Length: 176
Image (cartoon, rainbow, N blue to C red; front, side):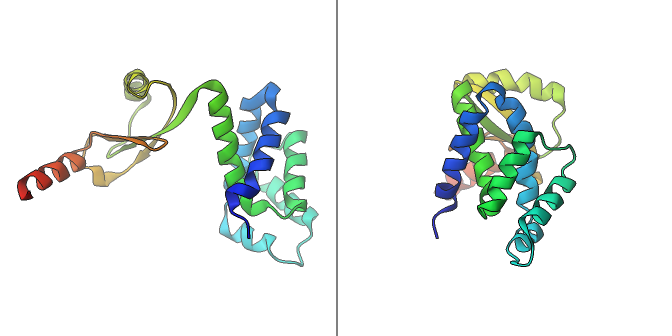
């Protein structure tokens, strides 16, 4: 079987080209749709030969918090009809990468031992954008194992100022 990324690429590129006028709007329905499609039970149901494509479409559309626009509904029907529902999360990832490439930005995940309020996030964002040299789309995830500080991941770049990382550096220095 072909790699998921290979299967997803033409769908992501076609969706990107078709939605040039409203990339943000498309991302607004594609991300939640991908999250629903990533559910293991839904994947199992989609693999059942007794479930018709229309039943699967109705189930997914019914689970969505907001109704799909016509472009979203057509895209979902196409994915279901071509039996590519398992590729939908990867399609969303590749679409986001294409959208970020066009705007010159990158997705960044900030791992923190404690919750970060919007004021603190707003204060650290300009410093991170300067450090990485591009506009960042920030998201925050809690990781209590860090003890303190933050760890920022942008693509394959990592900036780790956590207490855990500093303790590891001290451990290496002391045992060397």
